[in-house]
Image (cartoon, rainbow, N blue to C red; front, side, top):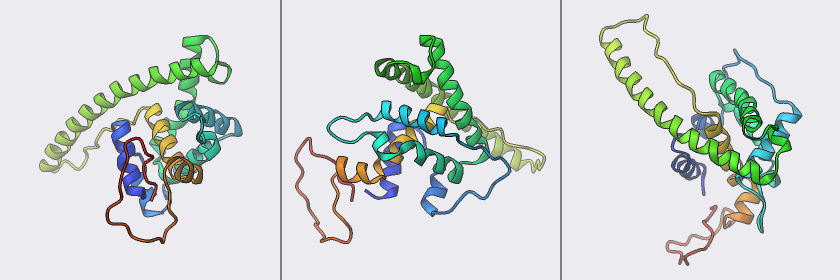
Length: 211
């Protein structure tokens, strides 16, 4: 599975375009360094546990086996614009606060079952938020066209960032399925270059192909 196909899959699963995907596909780095946010080791550990709750280890590797927390750090720093970087970092705190509100304990201190239930709740919240964002973006696009027609050069388009859990979910999936454990032990993988098969038989229940 190439990068574009993986991004399409994640977009379908999360209901929104993968943030920073343009820079990710180009292989470049975000040059806008007006805002700098750093990740602590505790942040990376926290993100690993969030990712592991989304993709836990079973008979196959989990998100921590793929070091998804570290992947998130690199991707957010290199591919997110400052506003989304800020929303992501604030999201770490918001998720922990949501855990305290639901269980009177921070996310790192609750049980795996409680973590699962919390993230299910946040996922539902993010879906509702994404619908509001979509409606908001459509309204802003129409307003943007009208202001451009008026040649109002002072007009500044309002924006609405993605829900922090949508960001974390997207990066968990992207980081895991583009990693060696995800591609070779969960997806079916054939090293490239390899022979060309124009028609490959498929049996229901088989793993998807990584390549």
